[in-house]
Image 1 (cartoon, one colour):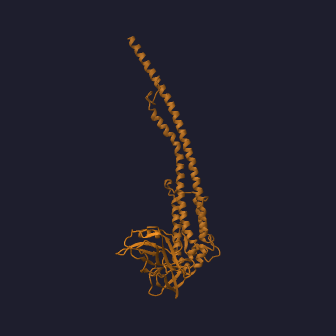
Image 2 (tube, helix red, strand yellow; image 1 turned 135 degrees about the vertical axis):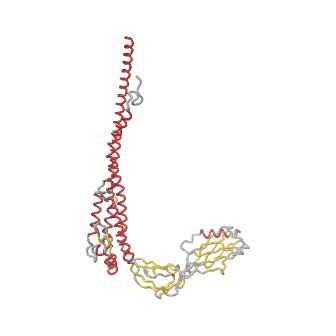
Length: 459
C-alpha cells in the first residue's frame, strides 16, 4: 500500500501532538545546563563590574601615592595682571612681582602698490627680511627666493610657505590702505630679537617699487618685570623659573608690586584623602550588592558566597589594617579614617586637618613613603595592581567562568543532538505505528464489508 506522508493520517491519531509533547519533555534535560550557563555569564558580568570598581579604587590610591601631592604649593593671592603655576620644585615664600611692560610681536609693511594681482618679480628675485641683532650683536636675516612673475598675493603665499627653521619668522598678509595694497609682515614670536626690522627686494620688475615703509614699523619688545626688586626681561609673557619652580603668565601691567604667597596646598591633600574614602565606600557598596541575600534566592547577589570576592576582601582588609612601621602615623585611624560595622570608611575631618596642619611630613610619609611601594598607599596600590593583573584573581575568575561557559555550550550542543536523535526515533516508531493501524483499519473495513455481503446473501 502507499506510504503515509504525515503522522496520524493513516491511524487518525494525533501523533504530531504527541511527538511535540515528547520533544518538550526531552528538552527539559537542557534546563539545568542552561541555568548553569546563565549563572556563569552573570558571574562574568559581575566580575567585570568588580574589576572596574577596583580600578577606580586604584586610581584614588595612586593619587595618595604621588609624593608631589604633598610637595605642591598654591598661591593664596590672586592677581588680575598675571597667573601663577607652581611645581614640586617650588619653595614656599612671599614674592613681590611688578610688571612694567608686556612682550609683544613686531610688524612691518611695504609701500603700497596699485594691484594685488600684477606681476612684480623678475627671474632671480629675492625677498630679504632683517630682524633684530642676535646675542653677539649681529643682525639676523632670512632670504626667500621668489618665483618669476610673482604678484603681491604670490609673494604672500611664498612667505607663508617658507620654512624659517629655528630662526625668527613672520606671517604675511595683504592690507588695502584705501589707495593700494601693502604686504604686511607680523613676527611669529614676541620679543625684541624676533621683531621684523626691514624688508628688501631684489630684481623687482622695472617701473615698480617694493620696499619697507618705516612709518608702519611696530617694534616688538620684551616683557619687563621685577621680582623682589630684581629686574627681569623676557621675550615672551610666560616667565619660567624667575622664581624656582614657578611659572608666571603675564596678562597686564601692575600698578606696583603685587605679592605672591606660596603655601603648601593642604586642600589638594584633603581632597585626595576624601576621594579615596569616597571611592572605597563606593567599592564596598558595589560588592555589598553583589553579596546581598534577603532569603529569596531569586534576589540574591550575583557573587553571593564567591571565593574570589572573599579573597579580595581579605587582602584589602589586611592592607587597610596592617600598620606602617617606623613613621609618626602608623594606621588610618590616626588620620581620622575609621571602619564602621559595615566595613565602610568614616572620615573625621577635624583629626585629618590637625594631622595635615601640624605634621605634614608625617602624613606624607604614611601615605607615600620613602619609595613608591613602602607607604600605605603604595602597599595598597601594589595589591590592587596584582588583583587586576592578567594573572590576578579577577581575571582568573573570569577565565574560569568563560571556560565553564564553553564547556556548558558543548554539553548543550551534545544534548540537543541527543534530543533530536530521540525525537527522530519516536517519529520513525510513530510512522510504523501509523502504518500498522492504517493497515489494520483497512483489513477491518474489508472484513466488515465481506460479512455484510454474506449476511445479505443469506437473507
